[in-house]
Length: 285
Image (cartoon, rainbow, N blue to C red; front, side, top):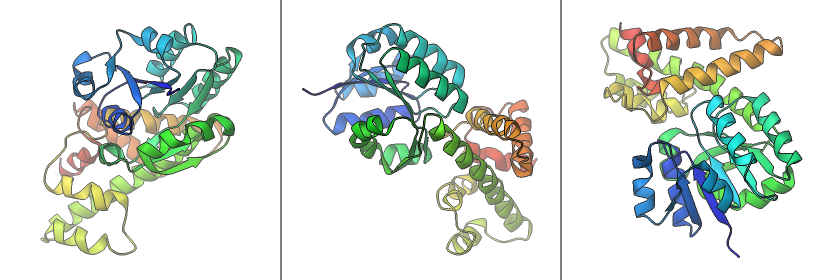
C-alpha cells in the first residue's frame, strides 16, 4: 500500500520540494499557516489539510520545512500527541542540533521515528531537485525514506546519530557565510576599480576562487535581484545557532562572528525579508 505523505510548510523551499514528491506519484497532504501558499500544490493534486493535527492523523511520513526552531517545537508537540505509532517524521528545517536530539528522543518514547534532514541549495536547488540533504537519525529509518530524499536532491548523505544532520548544516552555513561575504567583496572591488563585475566574476569563478555563491548568486547581485530564495532573517537564525554551538564546544569562529554582525546590521536597517545576497547593500552604504 502506498504511504500517505504529509508536508507542513509550503514556503519558498517547501512548495517546490512537495511538488517533486507529487510529480513522482506520491499521495501528498499539505498544510501551511498561510493557506494561499498551498494553492498551486492543491491545484496539482495535493490534498489540503485543515490543520497540523489532520496531517498527524492521516499521514505515515510527515515532512516539515519551517522557519525557526520555535516553529519546529510547536508543530512537533502537536504531532506527537496525535500521530500513530510507526509514523516517520522528517524535519528539513535548519534548526538546533539540541532540539533535533530532543525530538528524536521524544519520538522514540512514543514509537515515532524522527530524522533531522536540513538541506542546502536554496530556492534554485529546491526547484530543480538538486538539493544537498544531510540527515541524522537511525540508519534503518534513513534507508527507508532514502527514495523520497533522492526525489528532492542529488546529494543525500547519512551523517550519523540524531542531531548530526543539523551539525552538518551548521558547518555548511559557516562556509556559506564566508563565501557570500567574499562574493560581495569581489563584486565591490571590481566596481571600484572600474571593471565590469559580470566579466570579472565570469573569469574568477572558473578558477581557484570558484564557489556555488559565485556561480549561482553573483548574477543576482549584479542585476540588483534581491528577491529571497533564502531570507536574511533565516540566515541570521542559522548563524546564531552555529555561533551558539561553537561557543558550547569552545570553538572561536571569527569570520562567522564578523559576517553575522554585518547581517544583523542589515536586519536593523529593515532588510530581513530580502535574500541573503542582499549583503551587497552593506558594502554599498
